[in-house]
Length: 169
Image (cartoon, rainbow, N blue to C red; front, side, top):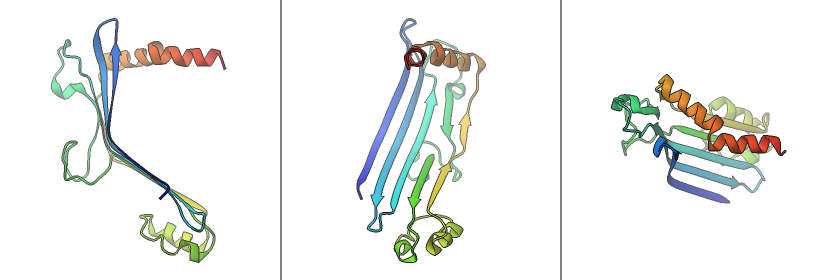
């Protein structure tokens, strides 16, 4: 293993400083990244995100608790966002390069690729494979809030930086 990292959580807050209120909170939990290089010079890159949740923390507007949630992952097992026993990920990916010999593939069968990819990789018919899994997402659209977010991202601080870089390339 060349690189292995885990970040327990990151919270991103979008603030409207002039109005002294918070526009959006985004929580990303359980981020992992792993990079391996094998003796045969093949590579493995894996990453995952356990939970994503975005909500409107502004209590000055009369909004029900259900409508405060903007984005959250819904899991097939019926487990909710905060359940500790859940082993599924909101997002995960795996990228693997293969060498063209059967011997170089041997020993890597613990990776979870579909059988047809494992068959092609062991026969030397493919060079690399990418597997991406995304859990179903619940998105709550409220026009006023979505318009305010779009305005913030286009004309607010992030938009100002993007505009600045567009002119000075």
